[in-house]
Length: 231
Image (cartoon, rainbow, N blue to C red; front, side, top):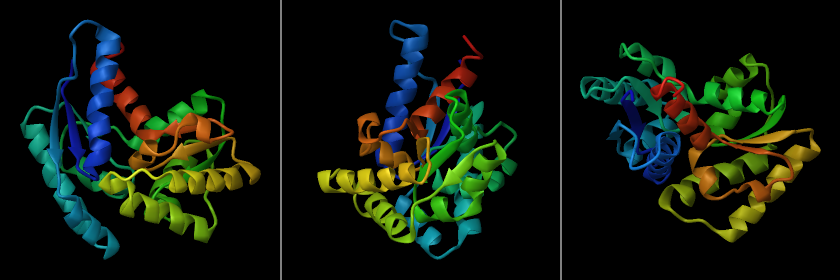
């Protein structure tokens, strides 16, 4: 198995899910006591969040690029950024190393297309929903991407940073997200991309009338497939 290099900690709540998923998927593929061969670099999310809020993306990218170099030096053969939002600096991170970076949006788009879905609703941080680095990547893969109205985007963003990133899963927030999903479906969404890795802690398949695409799980599935070279 190739060694996976994880750039995590954004937040550690979802990075813990990545660790669980990668090991479960490896065990499912190989059986017995097999687990994933990986190395993890977990950054301080408080520092990254401050740079996000200030629009200092290049500085945040430099931190992740340094993490990527450390992972490569530790023997990683393939890198994952364990967060959707920080794929804004994916090119900067990829340029810092000689090993490949498995882009989360590409893994997600492939799964959406394989399901026969073309028009999706996107939930995520305000950065992910409103900027082009992620929406544009999905669109370049042939998807039509819808996002919620401004007030709903603000709600989705707030719940991520104020609740999910600190391990709080509230039923009232699940109900609010359901209403946002219903609005996207009414606007024509055939599927919902959970475009923030923390959202999988809150939203389950039964919370949506259309298929949901959990990006952390899809990223992990693509990573294990790549690490095992199709085994």
